[in-house]
Image 1 (cartoon, rainbow, N blue to C red):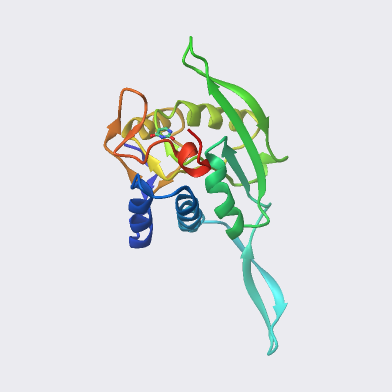
Image 2 (cartoon, rainbow, N blue to C red):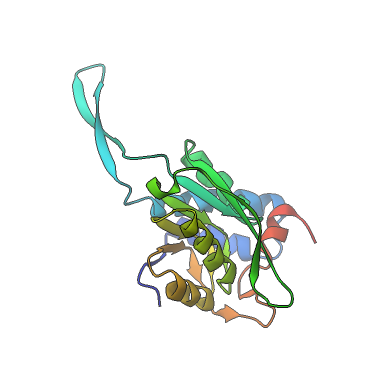
Length: 210
Ligand code: URA
């Protein structure tokens, strides 16, 4: 499917995901659960960050203590639903730089078109984590990663809450170098492009629209 696909099976993640899928879960609870899951997914996606050491003094002695190496990482939210994942990840990694990619689907060509693109400088020196809750067709995710690569990013990871097999396959074809971390790969997409069983429209559920 995808060489670098990680499905986080942790009981807390799966329990929270079930609550989020439930159509009777309120907007407030959905948002809170998304924040909590995003931190657990962020824990997984950052397991192999490069480390170095820094000389510090504890109250007892000096030591070479582990710290993250390199430039601050960049979190890139795909608008608008990406922002729901972004908040939680930023709580865990408060010094991260943040960028936004806005894409809409052209109704004639059905291809994603960029309407907003603002990302941190020196992307080529940063780990770039793209966040978008739903990896459905994968078209907008693949297009967003294209744009980030054009902007210099060369170390990209993709974090989503739910994925469809179609989206995972699309990303594997377009960007086999981009590892994906998700809480579930669901059954399929329906004829409207929704993930089944899924959780509905993630943006609407987190922002209370529709
Ligand atoms: N986007 C959503 O918000 N939900 C889906 O099921 C697919 C794409």
